[in-house]
Length: 400
Ligand SMILES: [Zn+2]
Image 1 (spheres, rainbow, N blue to C red):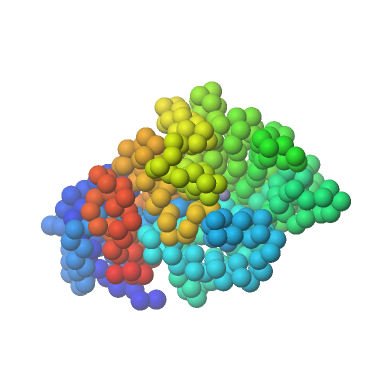
Image 2: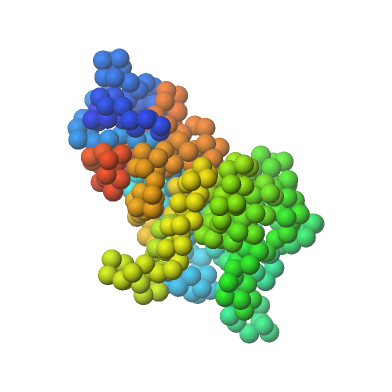
């Protein structure tokens, strides 16, 4: 590793919570050693890195990625799961990992391999060993689905089609599945609390509350969190009461459900960019045509979640759209009603807190030197997050 001692000198530093004009950051080896006004931080023995014109932030944390998927307008999800070789998918994922890191996202919570078994575990190991460049990964491996509820679907009932996640239900099978995924490398467990199943076009709840409670109990006893895909109010309610820590999507939540999330401390990962991307893949000409019903509804429910004071994670479901375009979600969070500074908090300190990553997400002595410098000031213009000038992960420059 090419460790050094650096003084990073941007125009301002966002420490994960607050913006500070005129701060500098001292990095030694893989950690942040000091941060504060330039006059208060010793430059002795350090290489000064001039980052004039930039804002330095903690490395951004992607809350919802699928490094083993690529955009559905390139290849539909069904075909990725059923027709692409695992080797092809992993080869792509190595490129996705690099693009993510160079976009300033130094950590991803990768929420399911979607048919690629435990390949996220090997990908994470390859990054951690320094074999390929990429973000730090929190992985969930295969994710859990109630039998019959997931996809690919639409085939003859006479044949069994491989699914994009692991089917398991009921007491013993669920306990075994959770433990097996943990044993093979899962840092957290993901469940699908609802989905469009069978011949239904609409999403419906899948697991019972008792099943979710059991999954949470088994995962928690090993120190791992459970996260839930849920779009329906009832799926969300079961996930909240069952003890899941984050809800992914939450598209048709209600004020009552968001109040329940607030009460239980359940965070929402809204994945605005995924809905935006899928609507465009289905033919919506954004900017030229009125917003489809799905988008209008998402604006309403996202606002309801904000009004209820729900903790908002930043996670776009990247993979549905291009890896490296992760900032798309953050730009959309502002467009849908969040203040830019709150979006910056979500993508750094809030995500770190919600995902139990105490060693990152802030600019603070002793934390990992995961840092990104972007041109301009993203607390004023959120899209400045696209203008990445420098990326450090663990004190090593990946872009300079
Ligand atoms: Zn997803």
